[in-house]
Each structure stands twice: as C-alpha cells, then as structure tokens.
Length: 415
Image (cartoon, rainbow, N blue to C red; front, side, top):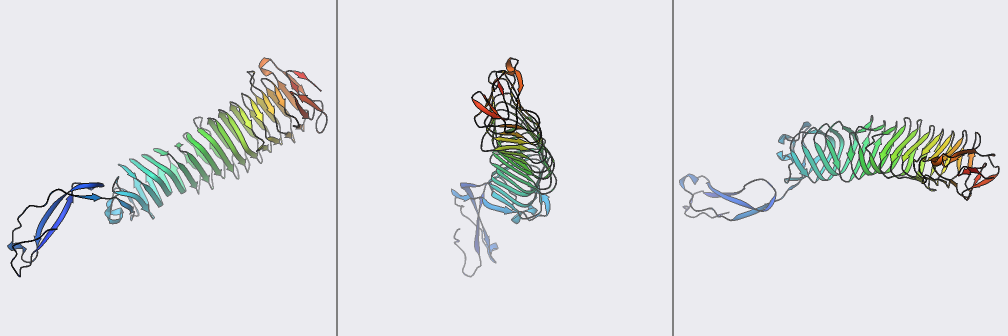
C-alpha cells in the first residue's frame, strides 16, 4: 500500500500497487518486488515519482488439493484442472479426480496424496506419492510410480514401467485375470473376483494374501515372500514358487485343481492347507516344519519333500498316496512325525536320509498295504513295511509308537 501527495482537490486519482515473487514455488520469506501505478479519471494529468519500498518478503503456501475437471486428457493440460492449476511439486499437496481419464506421460512430480474415482494411465515420467495412492482403475505401460500405500478398486493393468511401494498394496480386479508385472512392497493383498492371479515379474514382500476365482500362478523363481496365504474358489491350480524363509498360515484350493509349493529356505506351515478335489505337492530345499495348529488334507495324493529335516506336527489326511521325504544325503535329514497320518485310499511312504522318529501316540493308517518306512538313505538305507494295519498292533521307532504295524529306524525292524 502507499499514499498519494500533490493531488488537486476534486481530481480523481488512485494509487494501485502489487507485489511480485520471483517464482511460484512454495517457500517462506520469499523476496517480493513492489510495483505501483496511477488510476482514475484524472490519472493522466499526474506523474508518479518516488521509490518503491525494498526489503519486502512474504510466504507462499501449497494448495491443499487441486481437482480434475477434464473428461479424458493429459495431466499437463491446465484446462483439465480446477482454476487451471496443474499439480506440480511444491505447489499442490494432493490430487482429487472425481471421474474421467488422466494420462500422465512426462515430468517428475512429488505429491502428498492421490485419490481417483476414475482412471489413471501412466505412460512415462515419474510420479512420487509420499502418502497414499488410490484409484478405481490403473494402467501402466511406462514411467515410474512410487508411493507409501497403493490401492486399486476394480481394474489393474501393468505392461511396463516401474511400480515401487514401501507400504501396503491392495488390488481388486473385478473382471479378467490380475497380472503383476513385478512388485516390491511390505504387504500385498490381491483379489481376482472373476479370474486368476498371475505374474510376469518377481514379487518381493513381507506378507502376501491372495483370493482368486480361477487359479493362482505365482511361479517366478525370483519371488522373495516371507508370509503367504491364499484361497482359490472355483477352478484352476495354485502354483507357488519362492526363494526365502517362508511361513504359510493357510492355503485352500476350494474348487478343482491341485496345489504345488516350491521353496528354497526354511518352510514353516503354521495353519491349514486344503485341497478339496486335487493333490498337494510341496518341494522345499531346506527344512520343513508343520505345527499342530494346522492340518494338511487333499482329496488325492500328498507329497512333501524337504531335502533337509522334516518335522510333521500337523495331522495329514489324503484320499490317495502320502509320501514324506526328509532328504537323502546327510545325517541331519531326520523325519519326525508328531501328527497322525491317514490315507483313506492309498499308500503311506516315509523316507529319510537318517532316522524316522514316530512320536508317542501318533498313528500311520494306510488303506492300501502297510505303511512303508525307508530310513538311513544317506548310508544306503533299508526298506521295510509294517505287518499290520488299521487298529492292529504297534511298535516303537526311536522311542515312539506306530499304530498300524511296525516301522524301522536304522534299517532294523522291531515289533
């Protein structure tokens, strides 16, 4: 503001003033350049003299959010945004997209949050979301998106680019298959309501939870997952390959199909694995431990191979054969059975590089033949079958008992 002096009485003259920043970027105490001019009916009769004040400063604070007003257009087009404000690093904290399609193709921008009820398409450039990214639909063919948390409501397509999430990922696919191009996050939750869950690149996460209708196919050998749960409802198999110490809390194959788990690392099965109409195959390079908190059941066969010590604490039930293998090459390859093993329509075969330990009170019940125990495979081993089944006699094996016949340890049979 300023004051005029030297204006004759009756003349209409006013002083106009404004301040200009050197740039539009957010900051405190930014220098301001003042400029003044004359206005009014008699302004032409006067000349403005004097010096504008110096040393002025002011703050520029970011806009809390800007709202998309376009239908289908580019992020960089100001006409698509409310008041023509294109979201850029520093000048806007967040973005709201009530509807429409936003295409992001160029530039590097950092925002606090992103919320969309429409569709977001990323083809290039880099977008960083410090907080949460949420969109109803998401398509990425290039560029880079990083965020703390990432949530997609009904459609996810990624054919290229980089997606990096430090926190949680929650993706729901309403139609078709949900395919991950490759993803790193802390927690990943995926739901394919009418299709399968697949991958074309590795998944790295502390926790992964999956729900699908027609199968789960995470068979990339570079997967690094620590905790895993999955359920498939109708058809299709569950194929899971991983290379990491792994905890499985629950896997259910609700429809037709089998479950195959391949892992490198210590494998702990702390809950249930259920195959309603198919078989269960577990092949782990490393020790396997199942606890009494869970059960393993399959309509057809069950095969569990540890290539290392194998400890069975869960009850196992199968409609077909049951094969348990605790390695074949070292003295540490011990098979410990602390759960009941029941085949309602097949055979039971237990194998170990060293001893087979059947804990007290645990039973082996086979529908076809007697349970076969092959121990000390590391030193050439021996094979023996029990002499009775069902509720018949019992024998001790390394201090334990077996209901359904005799068993062997160290190549000998005691009865």
